[in-house]
View (cartoon, rainbow, N blue to C red):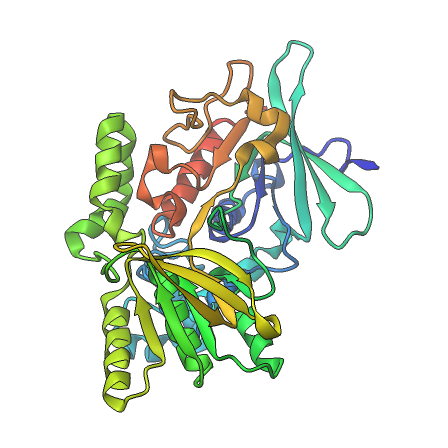
Length: 440
C-alpha cells in the first residue's frame, strides 16, 4: 500500500533521484545556500538513493588507479573555491594535505577520491534517504490543469514498510549510467561486467578454484585496467585482451583538447547547430571514449615484452578480433569463440572468466518517469529537449521543474556524464530552482 505524503503540508523545493557525485554536488550547493538563513528562506531538499550507503564505481576502485580529471574539478571548487567541502579541505582534515602536495600531481588515487566523496556525503546525510528506490514520478494536476508539482514514490530496498510518496516542485534526475552488455552476450557467474571487477575477482580468488585463463573484451581505459588488474591478481593465469582495434588508442589529454571540458565549452556546444555538435563529438571522442592513458599502454606493452624475453607469455593481445560466442565449458568454465576479423578465422579459448569492459549507456528515462515522461518535449531525433539550465522542456501546462544530470550529451556535450563540470552544473540547477521558487 502507498503511505500518505510525508506530512500534509510538506512540499519539497527539490527532490533528487540518485545520489552519486552529481546530486551530491547539488546537495552541497543547497546546504551552503541554507547555512545562516531563516527557515522560511531555506530550500527544502531531499535526495533518494537506492543503495544502502554512498558508493561510486566501487567495483573499479583498483588500488593504484588514478583519477583522469584534476582534483580541482571536485564537488565545489569551480563553483565556490572557498568552500570547506573541497578536496583540499578533505585532505587537511585527514592529515594528508602536505603529503599529497609533495606528490606534485593533479590526479589523486581513485580510491582516495571515493573517500572524499564519502566524506562529503556524510556531511549532508541529513538531506539523503538511503535504501530508497524511486518507482514512479507522477504529475500533480490542479483544477486548471497546471502541473506545479510532482509526486515521487519510492520503496524501501530492504523490503520493509509501504511505499512512500513525497511532493516536490522540482526533480533532479541523476541516476548515472547502466552497464552495457553486447546484444549476443549475457552476464553470468563467470561472465562479468567490469563494474563488478573487484568483488567478483575477490570471490573467485577466495573460492580456491584455479584461474588458468581470463579474457577481457574491450579497448578503453576500464578494459586496460581490468587486464592489468587480473594479470597481477592471478599470477598463474593467462590474460587475453580482445578488441576490434589494432591497438589501444591513447587518450588525448593535451591542454587544447581538454578545453572541450571547460564550462564555457558547454555554452558553445549548446548554442551550436546540430551538425556542429556532431562534429565536436567526433573530433574530440578521443578525449573520453574507448581510449587509454598512455602510461598504462606503455606499462602493458613493457610487461608483454618482458614476458616474451622470459619465454613465459601470460599477457596476450588479440587485436582486430571480436568475441562471437560464449558457451559452457568443462569444470564450470567457458568456451569463448574469438574471430580474427581480417580473415574470419576463429579460435576457441577455454577460460575461467570473461570480463565485459564494454562501457555504459544512459538509463531509460521513460521507464522511471512514467506519466511525467509524457510531458517532456522531444527533438526531431526523439531525444528529450533540455534547456541550458539542464531543465527539461515540457508542455506548456507544466510549471514544475524536471532537471537532468546526465543523459544530455546531445544538448550539453561531452561533459554530460563526466565529473569535469559537476560543481558548475550544480550551481546552474541551484540557481534555476531558486529563480522558479514561489515568492509567497
